[in-house]
Amino acid sequence: MKKKTKKKLCIAACGLGVCYAGLSLLAHKSRQEQEKDPDLKVNTYPDQGQRISNQDKTWYEKYGKRAIDVCLSFGGLVVLAPVYGAISLAIVLDDPGPVLFSQKRVGENKTYFKLHKFRSMKMSTPHDVPTHMLENPDQYITRVGKFLRKYSLDELPQIWDIFVGNITTVGPRPALWNQNDLIEQRDQYCANDVKPGLTGWAQINGRDELEIDVKAQLDGQYTKELQKSSLSGLKMDVKCFFKTITSVLHHDGVVEGGTGQLPKEYEQIGFGQEVKVNKRKKKKVLITGADSYIGTSFENYAHKHYQDNFEIDTLDMKDEHWKDYDFSKYDSVFHVAGIAHADVDSVSEQEKQRYYDINCDLAVECAKKAKEQGVSQFIFMSSMIIYGQNSSVHENNRITKVTQPNPSNFYGDSKWQADQKIRELMDSKFNVVTIRPPMIYGPHSKGNYPLLSKIAQKSPVLPYSDNERSVLFIDNLSELLCQIILVGKSGIFFPQNKEYVSTSQIMEEVAKVHHHKAPVLRVLKPAVFVSSFVPGKIGKLANKAFGNSSYDKSLSVYPGMDYQVVDFEKSIELTERL
Image (cartoon, rainbow, N blue to C red; front, side):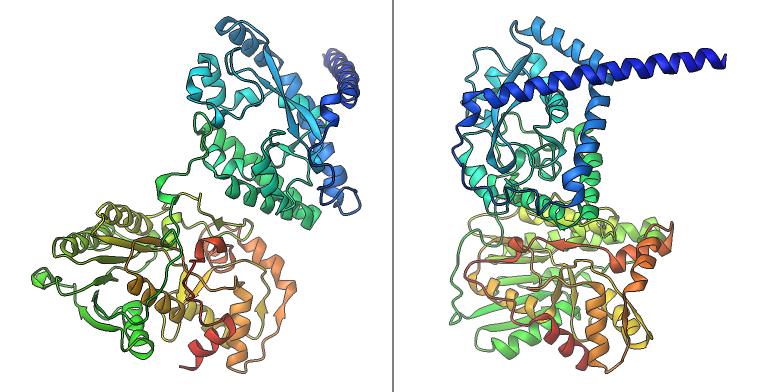
């Protein structure tokens, strides 16, 4: 029995060896043909590659990626051979003609190559035209093609392109030779200097929904990680590979016709245009929610820095009497009433319902009253939490304008529901502002910051971390609020400090202010990393405290408005000494 098994394994190994040798010869022939193809030698951008030589590449980029590519692509070609056959037959039966089609694409350092796909469009479709540039692209897509595109099966022949060496498994998607806008945008981020891929960072963060500039920016993020080190490049590729599987199963980001249109929610950041803040205006403001940290801090800041601009009142929302209050005399209502974040693992169903009653229903009811009584602007304090509690030590969770809200618990969901319902009330006479801040800190603040401050003041040593966090000093938020009210328009805001910070930076600055000499030990970094994988509270606390969670800085810049008035070091000093 063992001899028979051994014989079968030998036959299988020999068969695979012969198959590999045959495919290698075909790949070599394909490369030679492309080298001789005159159409691929004419390069529109011959001198614009940023990094032509291999000297700057990491070991992983030089050798590791290619080794992985060969193994994965060869295995894919062998295993998927029956699938190729079935798809080919379906294509021919649906619309007779060639099964494959090729396009001239831009490769590494903007050289040209031929990319292959299963044909998903009719034979009458114009060639070398991006789908989103066709008039009514649906008319050209075949029935089989629609299915292939939905599940990305039309991309399967590119496994052959990986085996040949024209593309890699993970990298920026190769642009068409005439997509000048995308190519030029990628130049700004050196994303044309790496080999394009079957899937990539932009593919799993929006795909067809992405605008050109956003796609190029995401490709630039991938390129930066790939070139940083072999480990960061490998981690990025593994993340992209497995997230691609999830995206394909859910067919995320596929817009038929590839229009590149973002969902309505992402069409405006800030006020959507440059504004002028008129600091001579006078406004009457009602804060709905008494004794809140944010509301009280804003009122104190406005009285100190904008005393000639604002007349501010505060309304307690704890009982039903607020419904009898006259809103009509105010220009802006700033709604801060709500329940702060709690331990979501130990809350009763009754308490969960209370979150929705206060964070959502009360906020919406207040907004409706403001609209009915002629208030021109309603400001709602949402939260970064609507994007989920995805702070992680081993993942770079940066939120961009294409990241869609995805609450991971009832607290985030109650805020997200209110966020949406209040913005639905917006019209030409009723302006709605939504603010989605990250962790807010300042003198006498609540939440996570005081805990970090205590540890920094008492611990004999501090753990080193190089995580990336968006944080917001209360004065920076208050300054933004003052300017938003003076402008008086609608918008979605993602305020943060100018600087990203790490957890160890926060604790180190706190210790410095209190003259507490606690060394930051790099040797503790592995312990933090390992603890993030521990099940239960330990892992959650490690990821919450030392994880990455940030807004892309482009989300926090609003032309005509300068609200980041206090830098990080000064903000810690002000927080700890007051």
